[in-house]
Image (cartoon, rainbow, N blue to C red; front, side, top):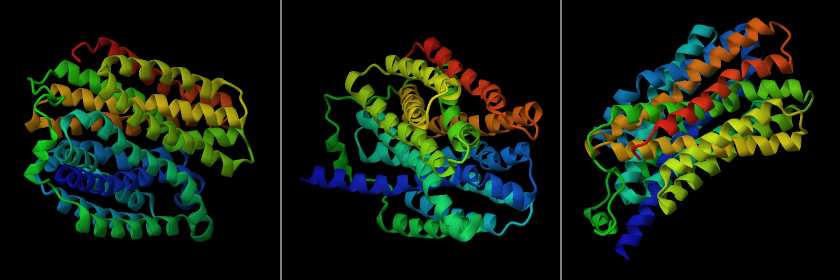
Length: 403
C-alpha cells in the first residue's frame, strides 16, 4: 500500500512539473501562428521573423549546462515555481513590446528561464520511480512538452481572433502564474526513503555508471539534433506557411494539420521508450526511428497529396521523429549518477540547437530564392537541410555501438 501511495504521488508530482514543459513548448512555437501579425507589427521580413523566433532558443542553449547544474543541486519545487513566475513576466513583456529589440529580449529571457525545466522534470522522474522505467518516463515528459506544441496552434489563433496576439501572450502570462501556484502546492523535490523498496535488487537500474564515453555522447547528441530538427523547425515555424502555399484558403484546417506532427511525436516518444523497456533493444529502435523519419518527411514535402493524406503524413512523421527522446536514455546509460543532470542538459541543448540553426537558415534560403514570391518549389528546396539532418541522425546511430 505504501509503495502504491508513493507511486500515485509521484505521478501527480511529475505530471504537474511536466505541465511546465507543455507551457514552454507552446510559447516556444507561438510565433508560428503569429507570423503575419508579428511581421506587420515590427515590420519584419522572413529572415528577421526567423531570428525573432529563435532568440528564445539561443539563450536556452547557452544556459543548458548551468541549468543542468541547478537541476542536480537545487530544490526542484522552488526552482520550477520561480521559473514559472518569471516566465509569466516575460510573456507580458513580449505582449507590450513595441520594437523588435524589446520583443527579441523578452523571447531570449524566456529561453534563460526555461533552461533547467526539462532536466528538472527528468530528475524528478528518476527520483520518484525505479531507474528501469526511465526510457518510458522521459518519453512521457517529452509528450507533455510536445502536447504544448500541438495545443498552441489550435488554441492561440482563437484567442488572437478575439484579443490579438498581445492578448494571447497575456493569457499565457496568466497561465504561468496559475502553474507556479500548482507547483508550489503539490511538487515535492524528493520522495521518502520507502521508494527504495520499489527497486527490486534483482532488477538493476539501466544506468551503468561507467566512465563517460565522449564519442558516444557526441553521437547521441547528433542523433537527437537530427530528429528534433523536423519538430522545432518545420512544425514549430515553417510548416504552417508552407501549407498555406500548398492549400490556399484552408488556414484553420492547416493549423490543426500541423498540430498532428506534434501529436504524433507526443505519442511516438513514450511508445518508443516503452518498447525500449520491454525489448531492451535501444539501438535497433533508434535505427528504425532514424530510418522512417526521413522517409515520411520526404513524402510530406514532395508528395502532392490531399489534406487528409498530408495530415496522416504529419502524424507519421511526428511518430518517427519522436525517437529523438531515446537520446536521453542512451546518455543516461553512459553517464554516472552524479553527472546525469549536466549530461542530460547537454543532450537537450544539442536537440534545441536545431532551432536557432535551422529556423534562420530556412528563412535565409526562402529570402534569397523566393524573395516576395514563395512558391511550393522554393519551400521544398529550403527544407533540404532538414532532410539532411535526419540522414545525419541515421548515420550517427549506425556509428553508435556502445548501447
